[in-house]
Length: 330
Image 1 (cartoon, helix red, strand yellow):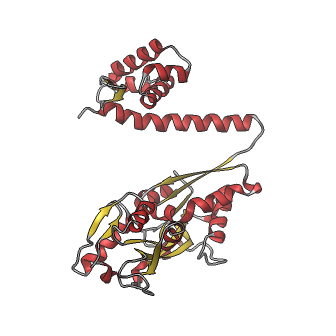
Image 2 (cartoon, rainbow, N blue to C red; image 1 turned 135 degrees about the horizontal axis):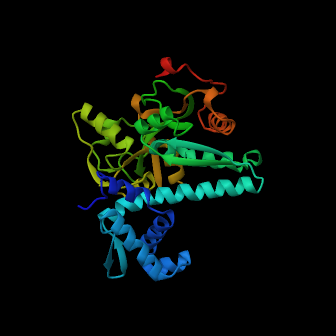
Image 3 (cartoon, rainbow, N blue to C red; image 1 turned 90 degrees about the vertical axis):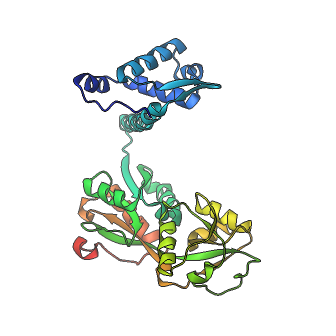
């Protein structure tokens, strides 16, 4: 597989340094539009100029970035690698431009970078952040919410690449302070006519007698269920695996199997479909999520406001809980 040059020699380093931002923006546009002509129209430049810049970029990097396809052009493996990096660069530059424009117009904008695990986002974090940003007093605060796995999230907080994080309370948070964000329970979603329908609660072991609609192996819920099934010397009988909780609930509604989902997610997803949510009567099925940060003193005013909002507004928050000593709570 082709890849971008590692930059072993002096010439390679020079080529990377000399990449101009306009060319990177044009490369992203061509990948998005799939044709030079449409990209040129979008960026208000002649198609020949786009072609020349891309050819020069390929020559500088020493790899082929685009190939002709039936309906235009497509990125090569090396092109895809560059595209991922180029999108990040273009996005960052656009945010810099937006910040500069705000200050030039006399509008002071505060920026909070919030990292969260997929499970925390599924719990309703987006809604809580949206409620915070809708408040008139927070009109000048911009929140960037990024999805990260717990280990990467903790590392980014330690390195100062983000100010706040939300993750499971079982994550290794040594060196970080925390506040309780949410508590939730995993439940079993079943079709209304299922054999388990009508139960007040169910043990996880009982669910293993039925087909499951599950999530990918990379997700925390999948890992949790696999671990508990292994402890029972059993296997989770997946009939189908889908990418999101919402898709899992649709699969359950179609009677493809049962599904294990967070209660909050199940309640939202069961509004328009005929599902029952049965509490899983195992201690591990009750989960906690925490808001973590280096220290309260390290938080900028906007980050502190968001932290207070999440701790106060999220369901299950303990009123008045304050920062805990990092060592004891790790």
